[in-house]
Length: 355
Image 1 (tube, rainbow, N blue to C red):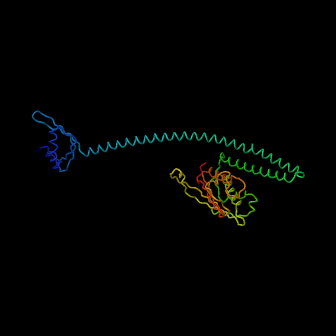
Image 2 (spheres, rainbow, N blue to C red):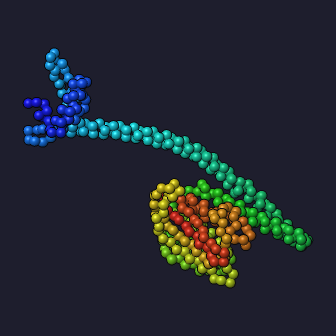
Image 3 (cartoon, rainbow, N blue to C red):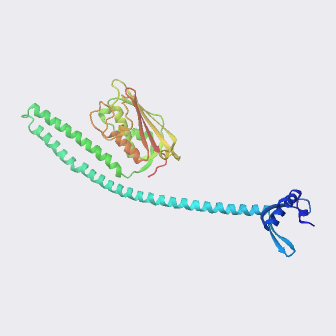
C-alpha cells in the first residue's frame, strides 16, 4: 500500500502537491498536519515530523507523529501550568505588598499610640491645673470679695459695692467655665460603663436634674418610643440634660415649649468615608423642640466655646460636651435648626456596644 493511500482525499492532495516535494527539496518537514483514514472510515488527525534518509540508490522517510487531540491536551496542561505559575507569582507579589502595607500600618499605629500616650499625659496635667491650680485662686478672690462687702457694708460706697459685685459675678462665671472645661477634658480618659438603658427612663432622670428656675418656665416632653439601647447611663443622662436645658433656655417667649423625642433602629454604613460598605444597626434618636432656633454654621455649633444663639451671653461647652459624649460611644450627633422655627438634634448610637 502506498503511503498516500492511508490519507484522506484532502490530505492526499496536500501530500502530493506540497508535502512530498518539500521533503525531497529540503530533506525534512516539521509539524505538518495530515489526516489518516481508520479501518472504520473515521478521520485520524496527526501532526507529523518527517526526516529523509538516503540509502544509497534509494531513500526512506522516517515519520514521527502525535495525535492532534493529545497535543491539544498537552498544550492545555502547559497553559494551565503557566497560568497557575503566573497566579502564584501574582499572589506572592500581592502578599508581599500586603505585608509591607501591614508593616507601615503597624509603624503608624505605634507612633499614634505614643502620641496618644503623650496627649493623655498632657490632658491629665491640664485637668490638674483646671481642678486645683486655677480654681483655688478664684475661690479665694471670691471669698475675699464677699468678705469685704460683708465687713464694710455700712461704710463702702455704692460704686465700690457695684464693682465688687461685678468682680464676684465674673469670678462665678470663670469658675463655672473652668468646671465645664474640667468636665469636658475628663471625658477623654473616662472609662465608660455600658448597661441596658431605656430612653424614657434616662430622659426622665435627666429632667429631674434641670435647674429649678428652668423647670418653672413650663414645657412639655413627648417621648414617642421607649427604646432600649446599651450605653454609659451617666453620660447619656448628661447628654439629655444639656439638650433639655438648652431647649428651655432658648424657648420662645409667650409660647409653650414642646419637646418631642423619637427613636428607631436603622442600618448605617460605618465605612462611608473609605468608599466601602459595612452596615451595622444604630439607634437613631431625634430630639426636636419648637424653640427660637438659630442660624446654622455647619458643624461649628459643636465647637468648644461656640455660641449657637446670638442672645446667649455666657460662653459654654454644652454642645461640644454632647459631641464628645457621642464620640466616646462611637456614635454621632448632628443638628438642623431654623431661626424662629425650632431645632432638631439627631443622635446615632451603635446598637452593639464597642467598649
